Image (cartoon, rainbow, N blue to C red; front, side, top):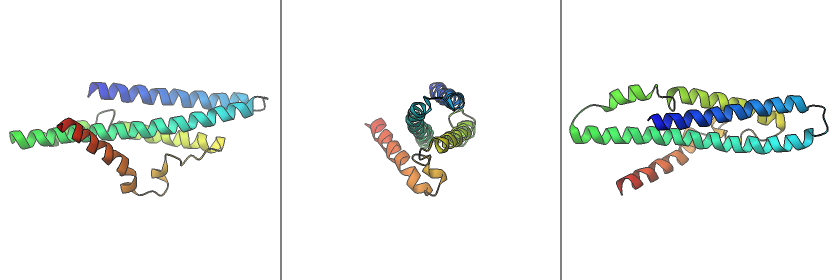
Length: 153
C-alpha cells in the first residue's frame, strides 16, 4: 500500500500546485493584453485536471476494491477474520479516508476555477450535481471487474 499512497500523494500534490499556479496566473494577468490567451490555456488545463482527478478517484476505488477482495478470499481460504481489521486500518490510508476528503477539496477548487474561466465545471464532476451514485460507480465497477478477471487469469 505504500506505493499506492505515494502515487496518490504525488498526484494530488501536483494537482494542488497546478491549481495554485493557475489561480495566481489568472490574478496577475487581469487587465493585461495576454489575458485571452491565458484564459484559453487555463481552460485546457482545467479539463486536464478534471480528467486527472476522475482517474485518481477511480484508481483509489480500484485499489480499495483489490485489497477488499484479496482479504475476503484470504479469510475464506484460511478461516481467519482479517478483513474487518484490515478495513479499519484501510480507512486511515491516505488514498482512502483522508484521500477522499482531499480529492473533494481539490474538486471544489477546480470547480470554482472552472466557473471563473467559463468552463463547464460539471464535465467530470457530475457526482456533486445530480448524477446518482450507481451511475458514477459504473466506471469503477468495470475497472474492478477487469482487474479481478486479470488477477484470476
